[in-house]
Length: 371
Image (cartoon, rainbow, N blue to C red):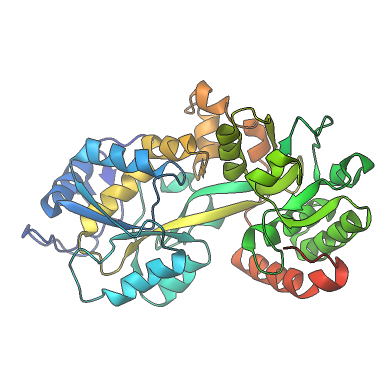
């Protein structure tokens, strides 16, 4: 669905407009025209932790400003999810420029922020196209974009490109495979172990952590695993010619390296695990209508494609792909769309359980000191 100026936005709660516009009753419904007017009356949106080179946010912010004429006050672009939550807490009674209206945080921060009363509900017009497993049923938080674990491969060194996790055990890949982090501490690496295990366990999430540890134990014994934290430089230099990392980082590396060496990004055939970030509106937002308009923009076709240009898969990707809404030139820069249709979004309980198992048993089962 596109963002139309005369569409009715359901379940929109009108909060007081800071500029003096009339208050509306809780639960009142506004048309897009009314929402735009209310947001313009507030005049500003305050964001936090949105670096311009992350997921194409620089262009997304400029697109929003150009479309609606609002000022965007950008706080601390390099902040982490925890910093964003703390910024809401620290500015509960402050309607000034240091109080964020909206946040973009890791999945686990959504439920905790809701439980602490730090965010407010709002369902965007395209709500039905956001997968149920990536959103709060009451609209307090919802997934915005995701990446999947993929193989970043140096084609100058690796001639037979691996297609799935099991392929990584082949003798051809001796001293070749690395994770982009320490699986005893880093979420990306933990999810890499989980993804390999999910493939080996035939999609059984309850067995994925144990199976992933067994897989990496075999990979290490075979001499294929390189116990270093892989980066673009280590891929390019050949120290880790196959790196397991989020696809959007791998795709960005492909652009940065610009063919020196040539990089291929492979989404495995099985064990496709997605890592999700979520959006939410502060319960104490100084500009609540601007925040809701921002959400409508982000979840419109235009906003979703803005993230995709930054190689982050927008949460509506599958629905938009099926509807033919993704331009061919963008698709051409990505792995086949069908590869993402198998993406699994682990629940918070599954993530917590797998993290506990993998961090606790890595040394005993795998025995590789990743540094």
